[in-house]
Length: 196
Image (cartoon, rainbow, N blue to C red; front, side, top):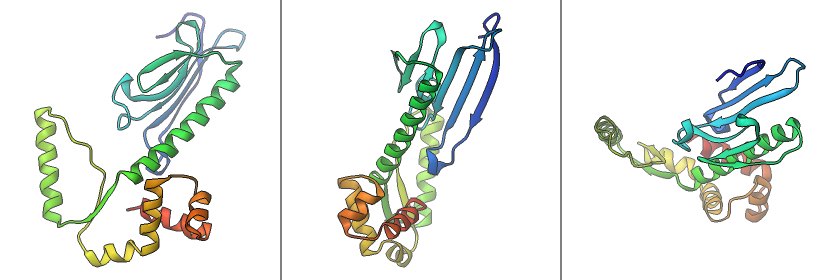
């Protein structure tokens, strides 16, 4: 809603790739006649993570004349010194959120061999649920229709890596140290399994 005497000087949108969390990053800034930031809105929107609050997962804004933070539908007042601090806090929290989401996705992904016709039939069932307005059950699945391909992709070292991530997720350096593997090899295996 426009506010008298304020003009929007920044209106930016970024659609991160799925590797960077997907969704939408939004930044809007409104200033007064002297160029002072009076209203701002920083938001990470991703309805796959949070359906409420118009899909806003995380956000900071100054609606109603005060600073507040949105997180998964909860709104809390915050006391911050200056817009630079607000922007830094938003970026840091978004980065952590994306990292945690990637780790959770990896931990909760099922990998299996499956025939194409079963994949297609599951899609039909999901479509029927959607058309009826029924709840769609969550699913994180990587299916391959060739067991030989699965065995080539899931080597013993990659299986150990996946188990370690499920038990104690951490940085690539932490995983490499725990598994006594070269960091570059762990990075390569994580990238490969993330593409599945």
